[in-house]
Amino acid sequence: MKLLDGKVALVTGGSRGIGAAIVKRFAEQGANVAFTYRSSAEQANALAESLSTDGVTVKAYQSDASSFEASEQLVKEVLADFSKVDILVNNAGITRDTLMLRMTEQQWDDVIQTNLKSIFNLTKHLVRPMMKNRGGSIINMSSIVGMTGNAGQANYAASKAGIFGFTKSIAKEMGSRNIRCNAIAPGFIETDMTDALDDKTKESYLNNIPLKRLGRAEEVADVCVFLGSDLSNYVSGQTISVCGALNT
Image (cartoon, rainbow, N blue to C red; front, side, top):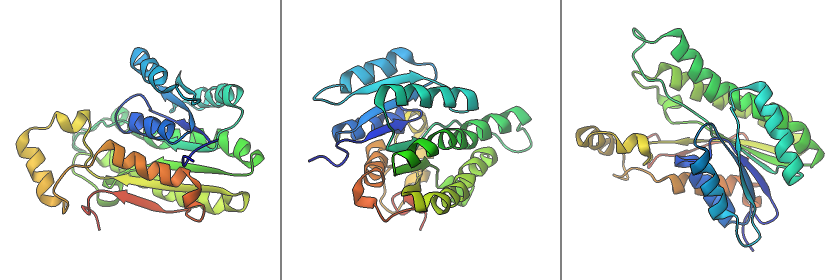
């Protein structure tokens, strides 16, 4: 028996990077998966088609998680297609990195809207259906930058730090309804963004990571599988760092 057999998951920002790895791992573990994308329709639909096999249904939805109204419509569509959602992974996120002296109001607002408000939007629209379903697991994607801060990322760090307080609060509010809420804080993970870094910058990162390598998106996805499965039934209100001991 697979760890997520019979479960339905909704993953925001699931067409690439960590999000795509989560979608793949969930499907491999038997979950039916709905995931969102903003613009890369061809890539998203190809991913969905490649994973919709062996009794598992994977479907892509174009939606903007930062929009309250779009998130409400998304939840309606997913519930119509899948009947329920057992696992919500709030993964959608962006960066607009620059020093505070140069940061514009728009760069601040864009990051907070996408990274933090999106988590409110999806959680708000799904907690009632989860209550009716008598349980659920909400997984919020944060970052170790939310714990440590980082020069040039005040907007990103603030958005990711806010996720910690939100996660703990929802865990306390919804625990009596058998709804769990946890956060994951990835460190430096191999993605399109890290691929673009020069060798000197990569080396400086590796020098600070005790495991002496970047993490893989699949390793973040594996923690999501744990938090979405019944193996973590007594885990709620927690933040799990996936960072190679960078932040201990």
